[in-house]
Image 1 (tube, chains in turn purple, yellow):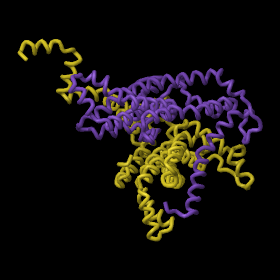
Image 2 (image 1 turned 180 degrees about the vertical axis):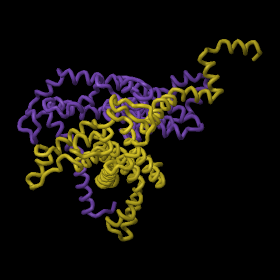
Image 3 (image 1 turned 60 degrees about the vertical axis):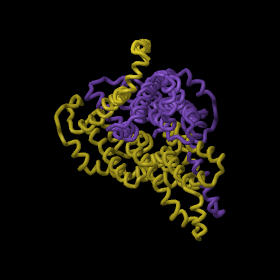
Image 4 (image 1 turned 90 degrees about the vertical axis):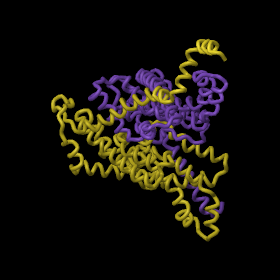
Amino acid sequence: MLLSRRARSLLGVAMGLGLAFVYVPLLVVLVNSFNASQIFAWPPRSFTLRWWSQVWGNDGVRSAVLTSVQVGLVATAAAVVLGTLLAFALARHHFLGRQTLSVLVVLPIALPGIVTALALRTAFSTFLGVELSIWTVAVSHATFCMVVVYNNVIARLRRTGTTLEEASADLGANSFTTFRLVTFPQLRGALVAGALLAFGLSFDEIVVTLFTAPPGVTTLPIWIFQNLSRPNQAPVVNVVAAVLVVLSVVPIWLSQRLSGDSVTWGRM
Amino acid sequence: MTASTASRANRTRSLATRVSAALHRRPRLRLAALLALPATWLVVVYLLALFALLATAFLSVDEFTNAVTATLTTTNVSSVVTDPAYLRATGRTVGVAAAVTVLCAVIALPMAFFMAKLTGPRTRGVLVALVVTPLWASYLVKVYAWQAMVQPGSGVLDWALHPLGLSGPGYGLGAAVLTLTYLWLPYMVLPVYAGLERMPDSLLDASSDLGAGPWRTFRSVVLPLVYPSLVAGSVFTFSLSLGDYITVQILGGTTQLLGNIVFSNYAANLPFAAAVALVPVVVVVAYLALVRRTGALDQL
């Protein structure tokens, strides 16, 4: 590519600065989790592993993680079922309202989080008369995790087409056998990828959760949010944050490998 | 096959096969069976929620119990659109969203160009993965990281700028814009990278053959071609910044954006919070309508 030396090096510098911009704050969190002092000051004067061992005994963290995992599992399960059904309906059939439905499924994630959060809150407490509980949190999460599974499955369905299923029917299999032996193995990668993305999305969710969770239900992000302003909890929050930096990458990386897409968009 | 063998064959077919054959003959029944659960969920849970939000904006609240009463009123909506304090907050919020979008574009373009045009195929995959991966780090952790960066006095930015005699932005609107740019940057890099990758190298060579320097090439060839991708990325950065309340609350100091007005009011005065929340919806819908005309939405 014909580009002057100067332009090349300028772009290289821009790339380097950009990468630094992306990674320096995360490294700060990681380094700070080893900070021996309870008060935040940069640079840290001494380092310790003390906080890392203390975190496992912290009851607040443990129950928050448990709550997050529970909500995540329920929301992911619901999202996988609903997203897959919707993907099949929209990929294999043409009907009035198809466009509308495909916009509707994206809305929970496309509209600003606070709008979705407040909308769900008003629906639950004012109109449906439902009391807030861990189930309202799970229902809210499932509503916007649905689109993530839907996107993965419909992309896979469009790529694989119906020829193999028609061949299977020609050979005498009924729809259920065809689904079990032909369609599902083709979809498995997309389903797992979508499920991992949905779980990651639910585990990290704070915007909508703050509005749909009652005072007793504390997911991990809510726990972090509540403890951000408590200075004596700062070391534990540091360790939790450092763990999350590393952990949240894993399910997404796995999902990218499984779905076989070169670049996934995650939320969309 | 005679009639008797045919009927015997029918009776020996399993239930699954008969159901499957019936469904195969009736595509509309198949569609209904597939759509029943997700469509009901979306309509009952989400559409109802949106209507509930719209309706609640016109209700009123009991002063003593903070419970929502069924009295219709337009005071909430009218105060949101006429009161200068809220109009200023709206302007501030839209301004923040626009600033974040522009900053994201400025940072993302050189990075995406470098990755798409100036790297070999193997390093490209690695670089893209490096840029995209932090998108998956927890939102709250990233805000927390920036709190450590901008904290006045003890923060990383203050420490880094001290030898130069400068100081960091501290808490406030600047820190909020910076953090929001950081949070949504991968959403801008990805579509721009995809758009630039699609652009053939030969166009750039042709432009330089015709005598254009790098800046002229960028202005006249690259920018028009990458414009739809920029717009596609801006949909995310704009809409995500418009409704954000957590970043502003943690790092914004005393700044009031629409998001945290809603957050601080929803418990005591739900109808008013609902009225305020309608503003981002209107802005996003207007933005999407504008964007649609540029054809960038087809790229999403």
